[in-house]
Image (cartoon, rainbow, N blue to C red; front, top):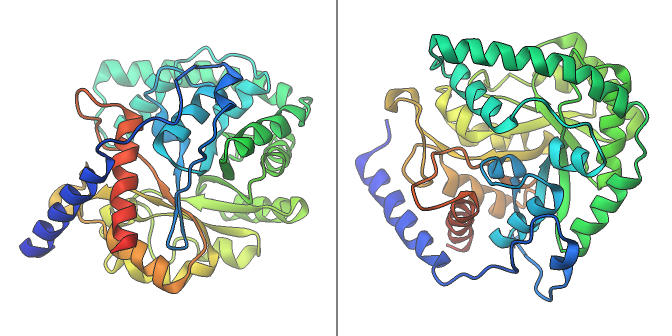
Length: 348
């Protein structure tokens, strides 16, 4: 259990870091879909004291426009210059067939199902959505088999010209149900976007991690496996033994919520295999595992960032906004608060 004075210190830290965003201005108007916003003079910079602070664009899932252009504007508005890009904005930009399912609604149900919170009606809705998505996935697979990489190269240029680097790519293309053509497509698209690695949920299947590692070697990209509360200190060991191109996309918040002790130790032990690390503030099982405002939970965000700074770890620390957005705010404003918190940690 976390000592009371430690919690008070972190809340004081949170109060001070939140104040850093006061008076912050947007880098440009929100122009959803129009390229004219690229005419700017100030570029973002979220590399602080040698630590690259980034974000996963899943953080913007509640924003009204999910296009690649709008997503870039959200990123610029936060002041962040490096991202883990979800598949949808990039694929939509490249002309992917439109989904019959509202992704925002599906992600919300998926998260609630993961937490065993669905009622009978929601469970039925979730199953219906899954059925539609299974049919849609076949359409997408056929599209991926023939689509050119030109649009992905163009998207990379648009982001790079705005000062934003894409370090990871997370399309829904690397699962056991995806074809080899889709896996190859995902790795080629990652290269076209300039990403060093792709990310996916760990499949908990040794044969599949072996296959992905071998395919990644051919494309010269890394496969970084993400985990939720199934993470343990040995969770990635088999995949790491299978291929030099298998790696970690550690989620420190979920690691804490899983009840693992000494979360900083896995960062120290596995740092050479971590390609990127998700940051969120979750509570331990003793505190109900909540996903909470940064600085009010049990995840050692300050300590891990300072560990990265002091040991010159080069993998990005990826902000993932998953706590409930307060009334009157939005995802962009909350990411800015997380960034301010992380910045203060690194400058302390």
